[in-house]
Image (cartoon, rainbow, N blue to C red; front, side, top):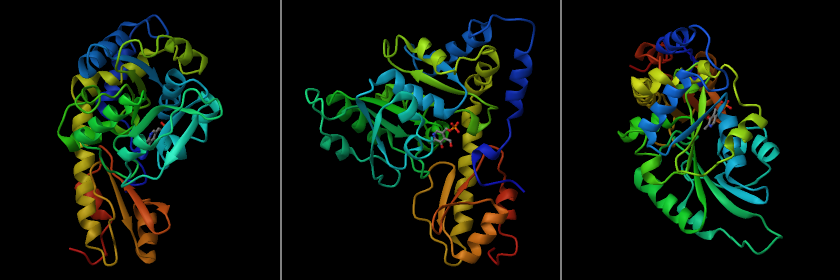
Amino acid sequence: MKSFGSDNHSGVHPAVLTAIQEANTGHQPAYGADSVTEEARRLFRQTFGPDAEVFFVFTGTAANTLALRALCRPFEAVVATSAAHLNEDECGAPEYVAGNKILAFPPVEGKLSLDVIDRLRINPHDPHRVVPRLVTLTQATELGTVYSLDELRAITERAHARGLLVHMDGARLANAAVHLGCELADVTTAVGIDALSFGGTKNGLLCAEALVFLKPDLAPSFAFIRKQSMQLASKMRYLSCQFLPYLQDQLWKKNAGQANAMALYLRERLSQLPGCEIPYPTQANEVFAVLPPPIAKIMQEKARAYAWDGDLHRFVTSFDTMKEDVDALFVGSGTP
Ligand SMILES: Cc1ncc(COP(=O)(O)O)c(C=O)c1O
């Protein structure tokens, strides 16, 4: 039985294992000076634009936290939704490692409201208060919704006008781009995002995430920050090679397309269960459902659905979730 507990429960796409196997030839210089990493860097520039500068790291938490270290001084603050992974699920790493205060605001369907940015008190002359410096958005959001391109443009314009930079936590960026029917650059570089945590692990890679600066000169000292933060892989080629099929062969799109389609199918099937309510639109690979307790118990066991908040449960589909995996959850439920 496949798990719907998280997209981290899935395995590795065979094309990624092949890329690792191919990278495993002979000797290469260490710490990113190898030809595989050079090729991956080129692909990132091709995908996100000529100014994109990519740094490979091991985890999404590292990408997020190091984005803060790179872009904020310790007395500067980060604006996020209270639901942001960086606020809720990173064990305080951003606060501990980067040292920034996080100003967390209630999300609306997972998203940061534009008026939050308008209402921020920003006074660079008052040393009693932190100075907001960075807005961070999660795309797709933690609640499985997706910011539209217009919403993103409005946020970056408003933030930049107030002297703020904008970071995107793109742990599930591929799923968001597939939902929007656009390319990765359309939903990042083209809408004014400054820095991006680009996820891979949840969408078929073995273990590889990237922090991408999308504009020149944003973090000239980042190579030092990454090393000091223990995220500089010596055998870097085994991280960077995972992005070769992902970007070159558009594996990101294929994998996220399958996961998204299965989330929609799962939503449809869940909505036929008596007493089940689905409070948010399903726009990526997560479905949130309020389940009556007897059904919740079954779904926790069968699907490994995660009890998010009381009766609200989260289901996550993966790149290898199939229709029959979804159907298997409903055997004996009395639904067609
Ligand atoms: C929205 C979001 N950001 C970042 C991460 C990165 O997490 P990790 O440090 O486990 O790779 C996750 C993982 O669950 C996530 O859901």
